[in-house]
Length: 380
Image (cartoon, rainbow, N blue to C red):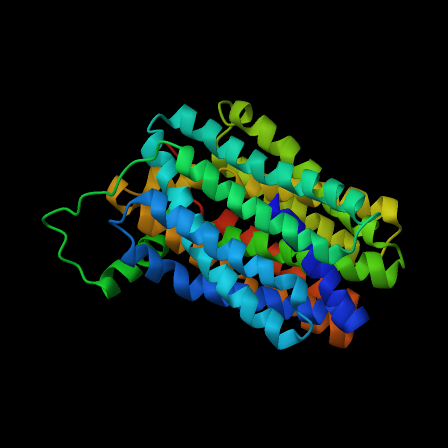
């Protein structure tokens, strides 16, 4: 929930600083975030491979809370960029560690699938609850107060991690004499060489294109193009989260009947089709925009939720942390392409040009993933 409030408040802060060019600032912010993720995540994972999980997660939350506390006082672009760099460095520590510990706790495949669904559901509830709460708060307080909700969210996360029973540090095998550089590149090598994991690299592109449209241009469409109020932005993001949550709830049952491949590729195709249809009118009426964002939520959730199953079926236990970190890093590397397209191209050439470029990338990612992914079940 803290992250959801942060997303909405950052969009409104960017609009405060730059007005109709808010997409450019958001693109810069998100590009900095992705650079940190791409560079820091594999290195941090290699350093922390044999550390205890709890202090790593709690420490990352405390750093994020401290940075969020400074955000209401930011009035210049460069200050925002520095704060985001530090905050996202902590996130690059938290997320891969969190993702890699789940299969260690739940070795059973069915339980792990349910856990992935619940993890996604928690994220989707944030997408819905945070905008609703933000919309209510924005009727009585300034948007800068939303950052205080972000601080509370990260502190609550740290408290919950402390109360959880998590596995201790993994013992380092006597045969593991690899250095930091080898461990940093280990997961990336596995992602590139394994057929299923290599297909995920194209799925990452199919995810990054529509996600950039949502994260960068939602505020531009709602506030600048349609001329609607701040709460309208919160509602359209909530509708996107609703679509994603519906899929997360259904997937544990669906994946007992259908293999991961058609689910993920179907989600990619849906998202690509929505972006292509948006070319007719990149700033449609609010009702049509809501339907489009709902469909994008469905497609993105269908792509992202089962990814953990693919990784666990394709990597050994000792490699899980490295592969999750590599997936985290390489998936976010796609945003180094899509976020600038969404923000900078949109600002310079217009929303339709940005939408067209993102639609092309979504189609390429979907097509290449379908061509690359072997037609075998994930459990094989």
